[in-house]
Image 1: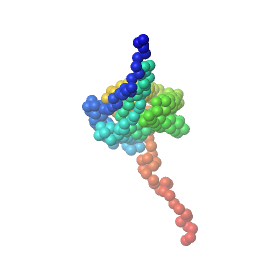
Image 2 (image 1 turned 30 degrees about the vertical axis):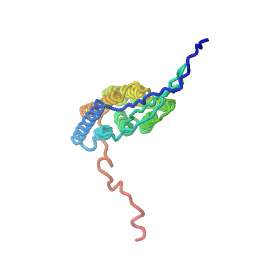
Image 3 (image 1 turned 120 degrees about the vertical axis):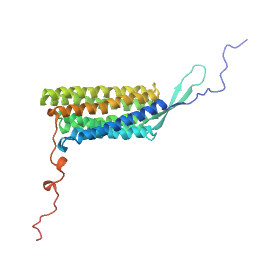
Image 4 (image 1 turned 90 degrees about the vertical axis):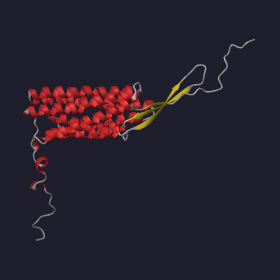
Amino acid sequence: MTSSVNPIPTVVPTSTPIVQSSGDTGDRTLWVVFVIMAISSIAFYAMAFRVPVQKRLFHILTAFITTFATVSYFAMAMGDGVSTTHHTIKESHKHVPDTTTDVYRSVYWARYVDWSVTTPLLLMDLAFLAGLSGANILVAVVADIIMVLTGLFAAMTESESGAWGYYAMGCLAYLVIVYQLAYHGRAMAMSKDSKTGTFFQAIAGFTLVLWTVYPIIWGIADGSRNINVDAEIICYAVLDVLAKPVFGFWLLFTHDAMPETSVSLEGFWAHGLGKEGSLRVGDDDEGA
């Protein structure tokens, strides 16, 4: 009698590790964005020197945003702001033993360092434009930092469930930012005057739309690894250019053309510590 049972393989099939890293297209993109950020920074500093120091708040904040981005993109282009993560994909089979595939993917952690500094500065631009209270600004900035850090942890962890757990935390933090800008920010901007309110709604809406795309890109890049690293770099590059240089030029040109949006800072910002701000220990008359 002939057996109908197929023999069980004695050799466990193996798979070749998958390495996902940047190619020439991604590397060139990083250098191009570095140049864009550097030129934008120079332009913003030049625009700052054209106005009195009391009215440079938006100019300085915006210039700092692209300055940090310049450093970040230089680091990524040089290969100094990147690490490799390892993930193991398990596949089940009916008639043969289960197989695993090792996936090694480049993660640009310098990008998250950049976002942890530049996105709070960008939020401060919008907050000062709207006239948000200190309490609202603090909540928005803390939520923003939590959002960026959880994104970094999600990208670096080797646990699939852990990555999506961090991702969910980051999305919740982002909803807090949306609430602060769309509700409190809009209400405060509209209470100033119609021009400021309309401008705030436009530029804040533009920012929130861009920021909503970031987690989508993360989900299909670092999250599920459905797109290659070059495509990830290009997607983030386009978003960063729109969210920083384009945002900055729009804000500053409109700010310079609309006196209603001007914020004038005197005191320490403009003049440093004068006599009123000097520290004195003891009393001059004591011990005489």
